[in-house]
Image 1: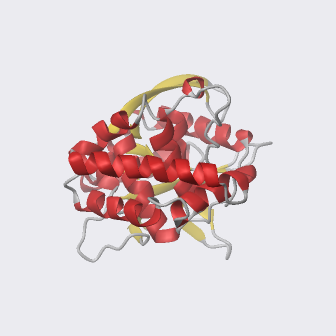
Image 2: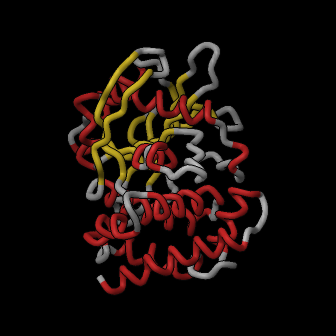
Length: 284
């Protein structure tokens, strides 16, 4: 996957809205396949935490530069991915290209005249002993997905969200889509941070535990059923290692993302929330 911008100032409301519109457009094209898909990644916080639920004076989520879609193993085992690929092509999606000009099988793009391109990254849970996170699973000659540890949890902890508005083509539409729940999101973002250390991953994780629902109890309610999973245990170890102290790399990178510089108050807030989440998980 391409590198994420490192600072909140590099994210634009326009691009975030285009990603949201693209998600809605995809939903209108993949209707009867949607049960085998789940939205993950940076679009999740804005879908689970509506702007109107954020208190006045608090920052709303910065959004994302691209759309991440998780594919279920059932979709692959029934060969319905062939239909998925065909529908994407008919909807004017095509594989993107990397810096060397080669097609990216796991990242497809759509370009609408007068607008920046939007990309969709496809991810898939590990299913083979030799699978390693970050590798590309070649599903067809022109289609692939990034192997993503913990993604199976997003199919266990997921919420159906109604998405309304305009598609990227200006059509008015309303669709219900499956979105990764807050428990699985914390796990996925902790694992992602462990793998690549991105400021944005630290920020997304913090934003979810800070603003989802009415407090940590709502996050914990979704995380509890996943606590005995190996990926969850690893994620909690990462949180304890990297996020539980104000000057840990996690809180520091949240501050760097938001302000471009360390911020003691914010870092203390991040660390305090994570410690409280870990305490609640240990006593669950």
